[in-house]
Image 1 (cartoon, rainbow, N blue to C red):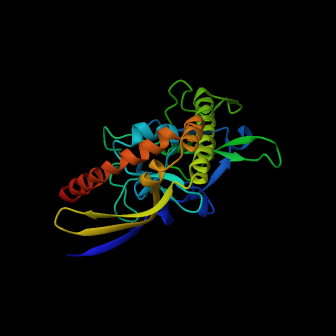
Image 2 (image 1 turned 90 degrees about the vertical axis):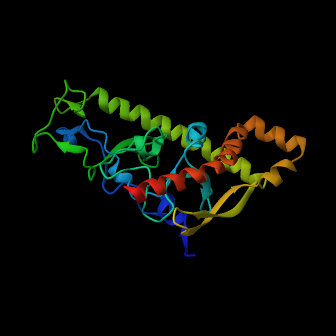
Image 3 (image 1 turned 90 degrees about the horizontal axis):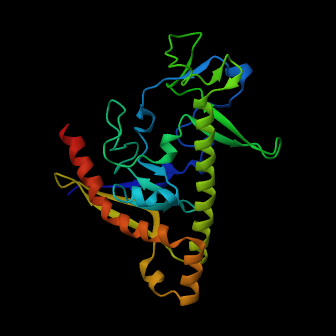
Length: 266
């Protein structure tokens, strides 16, 4: 029986790369430089086709745990959903860039091609950026573009932010808040010694066995041994929801096997 190993951390850990996952050419939005830019209306998730692990916020876990295993990677123990059993393969994005229904689409994916850049050292604020390498970002002056009453343009008359830009800023701001809250929860859980290294053995249709490694999960035995005082500390910090969602998501490894079988048949 063939066995192969898949490391979860390298392709998923945005913190270890020069640029965050998916982003190739992020630029701070500026009406002088980007006044003619627009956003195509189509929902195409092809950019995520090779991501076998994607960052997830604690607030999203109740929706995500039904479809994906949730694990923690890297020294920062960043939470991610597992979307593939092999490197560079997302089993939930098809050849046409559609995300498989009815599975939850993480906010990290939905915010693309926008992102907030931390410029607090210079300007004291977070700045909205857009990935110019995204196929959804087009120059209205250089290519045919459907305006939809200004909803898809990024600036009115090349100067004022449109509703699309304002919504992108609001979404990215909320994402950043959720990310910061998740980081605090992870640190609280780590302080109580509840993370443990694990690996998962997945048997695919046809008998191929894959060993998924280099990730951590909640140590349920350690959780059950906590003192009442420590458990209360976790409850007050809001960490219990993340803990129980991660534990429940272990049932979703079977979802990956099912998706892999579907991909093989098509």
